[in-house]
Amino acid sequence: MSTRLFSLTSLLLFLSILSLTSCGSSDRFTADNGVLDLREYDFSQHISLDGEWKFVWKDSSDVQADDQSSHILIDVPDAWNGYKYNGKKIKGHGAGSYYLTVLLPTRPAAYSLESPTVGTAYNLYVNETLMGGVGIYSNDPDMGTPAYKTRIYNLGNQANELQLRFDVSNHHHRLGGLWESISLGYEAEIHEHRENRLAKELFLFGAIFVMGIYHLGVFSLSTRGKAALYFGLFCLIIGVRTLTTGEVFLHQIWPSLPWQVLVKLEYLSYYLGIPVFFLFIRLQFPDELSKRVGQVVVGVSVLFALIVIFTPVNLFSLSLLYYQPLSLLAMAYVVYGLSLAFLRGEEGSSMVLIGFMSIVIAFINDILYVGNIIHTGHLISVGLIIFIFTQAFLISIRFSKAYFTIESQRTKLERTNTAYQEEIEIRKSAELEVSSHKDHLEDLVMERTAELERVNKQLEILSRIDGLTGIANRRQMDEELSREWKRMLRQKRPLSLVMCDIDHFKLYNDTYGHQQGDKCLTQVATAIKESVNRPGDLVARYGGEEFCIILPETDQQGAKQIAEVIRKNVVGLDLEHTSSKVASVITLSLGVASILPDRDSQPSLLIEAADRALYQAKGNGRNRVEVNLSE
Image (cartoon, rainbow, N blue to C red):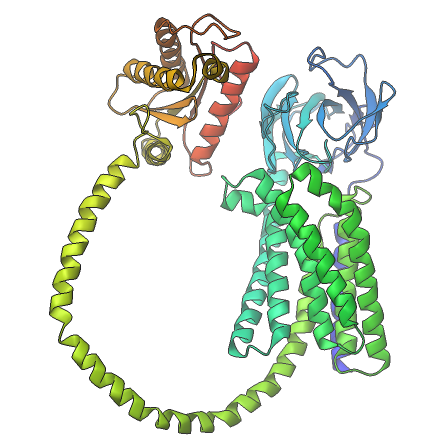
């Protein structure tokens, strides 16, 4: 009776959390025809900018970013897939601009805007001022770069009206657009709300991860405890999913993790979590859940997992449409089996059934949330916490019985240990004989070690130099950037980075051959290095025909001047390039970014800003220097 009460209390707690989470802003304040009137909103808490936004689909480079003359109305949050533009349905891949006019109270106040993950890259403009973005937005599939990151933009004091524009591009996922709610509120409240959400999600992850490690530890004590193994693996899988959804903590822990890998981990945590969880439940109730059905669930899930591993995102993301109904069928079958076990009076069946229902409710919520039917957020972690409370109690009871058996075997093991004493004595005598040769072996080891150290020092030097151009390679560049970042952080001095790329170098290789191309790279690298005179500056080959220059204690204007000197010196090499679409000689496109390092940012932010400026230089005609002004 007590176990049923415990499980029922857990389920009621989950339903309360679900009802609170689903509470959003009043339906009174929703966007209509691209306008959201908040003049009467008190901003006691942030508000989601949901409703009808104006949308311009940019199917060619002729469409200007601020052209709203030909627009449609599109719901936010929602993917743009399926909406009709000029009589044609919009597909997942492409680019478009979202427009929203927000009417604010007349009294100025400091506002902030929180943008969740977007499909799959964007630039944000507020009152025609670029505030920043995530990924690299481009109408060209070869230029765009996807990324997932939740960001808060401090808008400063605002009043009367805000003009918002999101330029969104997607060339890598099946869905594109503003698929999650964007929030607006007072600066302090937005930051506090995010900190509270971070604390909650970190608590959920920590509880799930610790429980997974605990059950794997229980399994290590007895390899026959497969229930603990499956449950521990399931907790770790859901823990990984927690890191790849919502705030995407995995990106903060590992900023250089490719976006494609991040999405693969998100899908794999879903496709592998279902079969592991099914095996865990079936192990407890083998008579009610068919082994053959379990094999089908595992086989189908492994097939979908292989699709995720070996196909790109835009293909395997389509598999979700087919796996979701299959997983719902699997859950319905588990509910049937648990109900049958409950009617038969199986031990622990009531606790497992009620705990499992919290998982089912959370799972259905997540499906509806991903499909933009409801806007509650991901709740599978909350459902799992409820289930963990019930299952941990049940598994603890079962394993306590096993511990009694282990205790009864302790005496037998002690007797066996006595029998091993003779063998230990024999091994000790063998160890004494080996120790007589120890001195000779130590001298030999020291000699070999010294030789290896000399070789390793030589290899260490070579590992930091690019073999073709003779300048620093990517490894040395990363180390030097990290070192200068810390130094500039201590000294509170600016740090600048210049990214440059040889224009149309592939055409150069195709025309003159790879040997001449290598010679060209060497000459350009030498010209760049000779253009940078200070001892503290570093010129490195970033990869292929890309070069990077680290400029400590250099502000944005100084870095731009150095970049312009580099560009002119490379043009001055007068290296013939008849296939170039820019000039008849070799030219460079350069991107400049400067930052004053702080403890809340990382060097990767500077690289991303310089790379974005480089792409802007290419997009604006090449053979030019562009400065990133958004960071």
